[in-house]
Amino acid sequence: MKYDFRFVKYQGCGNDFILKDETSGLRTPDADRSAMAKFLWNRNFWVGADGVLFVEDAPGVDGSMRLFEPAGNEADMCGNGLRCVAAYLMTKLGKEDVDVLTGDGVKHVSRDGEGYRVDMGPVRTLRKDLAGYVAEAGLPEDSMLQFRVDTGSDTVGGSIVDTGEPHIVLFTDALDSVPLVKVGEGVNADKRRFPESVNINYVQVTGQHDISIRTYERGVFNETLACGTGATACACVSLLLGKVQPGPVNVRTKGGMMRIELGPDGRAVMTGPAVRVFEGRLEVEV
Image 1 (cartoon, rainbow, N blue to C red):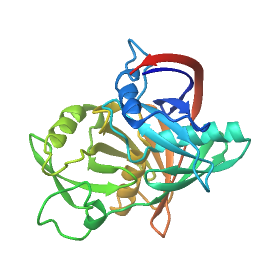
Image 2 (image 1 turned 180 degrees about the vertical axis):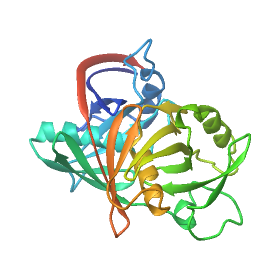
Image 3 (image 1 turned 60 degrees about the vertical axis):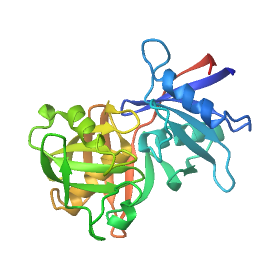
């Protein structure tokens, strides 16, 4: 089928997206959305992006978002993509805050200076909360903050949490030299343990309230410049394990900075940028 549509290119800390507004009610079938994502991500032959965002109407909220990634799969959630959708809706609707329906529920987003503040919801650390992502008999029904990870060449201690997406968090003193892609591929080769794949993050603590991270994203199956749910996971694990001091955590990614806060109720708040890069028109056949 042929499609001719306008799009907007957005990026959040270098994590970039093609945004297609389908609030008029003319929605692309999921199979075609998946097919589009499989080739539009290519930066040599098409627009290039880490995913394609489809914005729709939904009852009781300002809009809904669905993200299709280069592998053709639909992501459960995306923090950077959410900020981009919220920025788009705020501009379109003339509002300072919006509610957006995601695969992880409704998220409230508000302007915060030049950035956007997102209520990410609860950080889930219990085995029962991660049952849809981790399939291994015998794991205890308790915290997954202490978790053994087989990297394909070694077994190391780490944590796994759900911040709308499943994230493994590993600490290192040499962030620049870790073989992130190799580890990401090695971990995700174990489909018995991770049938839906999993995101991999390495964290280096750089100060009492500061960390630097690198993220390998499932669906993209490569390192990305930034990951909002990954930044949230890394900051919250750092706080819960006492790696950093209580309070807001500044998270440096390859693409920019985010600030993460963890409330006493276990809910996380992410603040970061969302930038409208350009608009265009696409003619595609899928």
